[in-house]
Image 1 (tube, rainbow, N blue to C red):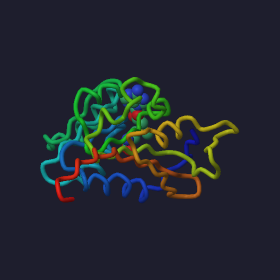
Image 2: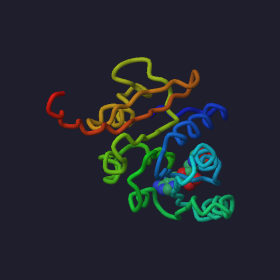
Image 3: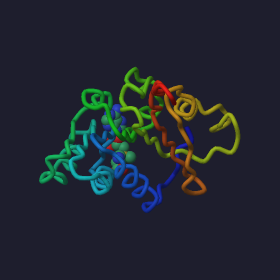
Image 4: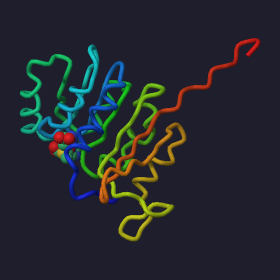
Length: 183
Ligand SMILES: C[S@@+](CC[C@H](N)C(=O)[O-])C[C@H]1O[C@@H](n2cnc3c(N)ncnc32)[C@H](O)[C@@H]1O
């Protein structure tokens, strides 16, 4: 998958806060950690937007829940990343729940369009920039990256953020509307 060794703080925070600003309804995240990422998401989100984040480690989830104790619009769910499917669909979904959580191997993530509203975005980070096509990591074709780049219902781009860091941002395609008479 090409996991980067470090995430420049400014790039990471901008990456989360900026798309959160474009979300109109619900933001989802897998892998809450202690709440730093969700804090950036909540900072960027507009009024009335709800944030749901799932963390499997109860201790970390407890710390994060404390961070958002005075934010009824932010919910920390304790459990496996698949629980993100219990709510949504999302305007923005950030996958940060460990390597396997980004692989698309789980049924729930096999078709990300199920989790996103039309026009909704998915952010999958911690890749190294691709230097070839098909993208490779450690000598092998990078199937994790291809999973997101080749999803038929997503338009996905890779954003290089640093020499050793890239992020994938996908947008669920909107249905083409039937033309009205005269158009
Ligand atoms: C890199 S940390 C999260 C950082 C956080 N998103 C942030 O930006 O501050 C990844 C987190 O994913 C959690 N995690 C790993 N596998 C998970 C799974 N299957 N379900 C839910 N959370 C998971 C880990 O416990 C860890 O807290």
